[in-house]
Structures are given as structure tokens and as C-alpha cells.
Amino acid sequence: MDFILKKKLKFYTKAFLKFFNMIIIALGIIIAIVCIKYKPMYKVSISGEEIGYVENKQALEELLKEGITESTSKNIDDIHLNEEPEYELKLVDRTENTEEKTLVEELKEEVTVTYKYYEIAVEENVIEKVDTSEDAEKLVEEIKQDNNNEEVKLSIVEKYTQNEEEIDTSDLEVAKVNVQDKVENTIEEIEQQKEEEERLNALPSINGIKLAVTPIEGKITSRYGASSSIRKSTHTGLDISAVQGTDIKVVADGTVIAASYSGSYGNLVKIDHGNGVATWYAHTSKMYVKVGDTVKAGDVIAAVGSTGNSTGPHLHLEIRVNGEHVNPQKYLYNN
Image (cartoon, rainbow, N blue to C red; front, side):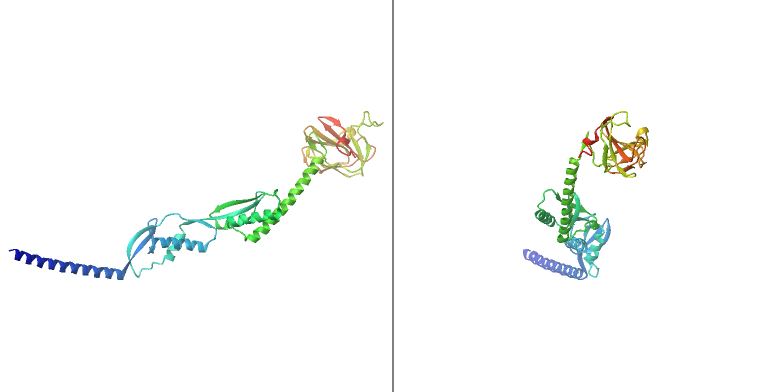
């Protein structure tokens, strides 16, 4: 009995192994056929829309970065896909076109590129743009060494943009020439400002108002406080003779508060300079301003004449502080 059972078991085992081998061979043939006709690929989709197939996800992303880098600026700081592609492993007919470059062009439409560059500013005014921080630092250091001038402020500003046209960077040598020119101009401007400040500081002033301009050039014919047969009281101003029609300039910035005929003063222009300071210009032949006009030091406001109580062409100049006349020679014509 045992012999019969063993013989049957051996028979069925052989039959099973034979059947199993046939299955393995069949599967191998099927797999071979599939491998010959198909290949494993990743289907790539954006927002659920299929855009193609690739063999390698990482390789596609590298190709995308390379493609963007080759076609755009070297100033790329970041490449960001607005929406990450979806990948699904598929068996695809080997005849299917799976050109990754085509996918790269499709994905470029879904990319935001951020660019980085560096601005060079002189006294906070942007003069040049360069590509790298190394270029910017080298340029600033060389400019500082060449000029040895600490008064000129050079600064570097790191800038980011998604608009490639904004970059417009310069070659390092070109940038250096442009920045150097601006630095030299700035140094000259600083020196001119210092000279102007020194000049302004040297100007005569009254109640903080700088008297920047002499109204006319001429000979003083009557001084402040002088007595005369043509006046009822001492002289309240300064008389300077000049040719009829000579331009009269205002001594400081201010506002016209009077411009009309005024008795013995004749044609009289009054300028309010603020801080209680006013100047009067009398006996003029013509008045070129009107009440309410704003004037700057040196503006021509009238012409020399002999109107009113006058013995000949001259300017009668008065300076008044809080309504009281003071001697103009303390501030003007004091030589």
C-alpha cells in the first residue's frame, strides 16, 4: 500500500513540476513579448492634463533647469515650478515619441524664474548693476582705494526680480569706469557745496535772514541817520546813486508785500523776508513785481529812478526789523 502511495505522489509531483515549468516558460515568453513591444515610462501630467512621457523623473527636472539656464540670464537665483508635475508609471509602446526636450518646452510655461543681481550706489543713487556679489565687492574696494575719499558713500544692494529685462548688468570694467566718473563728480559736488556753505556762512545776516545780494553797485550819496534840508527827520535808509533804469535786485528770498506809489518814497517795493525782517526799495522808475509774488535773492524787482521826493536817480534802501528801521551799512555796503 505504501509503495502504491509513493508511486502516485511521485507521479503527481512530476506532473505539477512539469505544469509549473510550462507556466514559467509562458510567463517568460509573455514578459519577453511585452518587453519587446513596451517599455516602462512615467506619464507626466499638469493639473490632470497629460503632457507626455519620460523615463526618469529626476532627469527631466535637470533637463528643465538646464534648458531654462541656457535660454535665459546667468543671473538665475531660483527656478520654481508653479505646479509640480504628477508622475504615473505606465507601460508604453516603444514606438511612442517620448522626447524629453518637448516636455521641457511644455514645462517652461509653468515655471517662475527669480533672478539676482547687485546694484552699486553712490550717495544712495544707483549708478551700475553687476552680476555677482564678488564683482560688486571688488569694484567698490577698487574705487575706494583709487579715491581714498571717505566722504563719498558707496553701497551694494542685493536685488531680486522675476523680470529679466530689469537686470541690464554691465561688464566689471565698464561698471568701474561709470562708477568712478560718478564718484569724481560727487567729490566735486561736495567741494562745491562746502564752498557754498562757507560763502553763505560768511554772508551778513539779521535775525537769521542771510542778505545774499547787494541791490545795486554805486556811490553812497546819503547815509543812514544823516540830516538834510529835504527831510523832516534824519535819514531812515541808505541812498546809492546809479544810472536811471539800472536793475535793482532783492537782497534775500521773500514775498512782495507792497509795490505801489507811496508819497515821498515814490514807487516803493517792500519785501518781507520772514523773522520780522523786511527791505524797502524806493524812488524806482519801474516795478517788475506785484503784491504776493515770491522772489529769490538776486531777482530783479525794479529799476533805478527818481520818483517821489528825489534829487536824482538813486536807490533808497531801507532795512526794517519788526517795523523799526536799522542802519543798512551794518549789513550791506559796509566797506
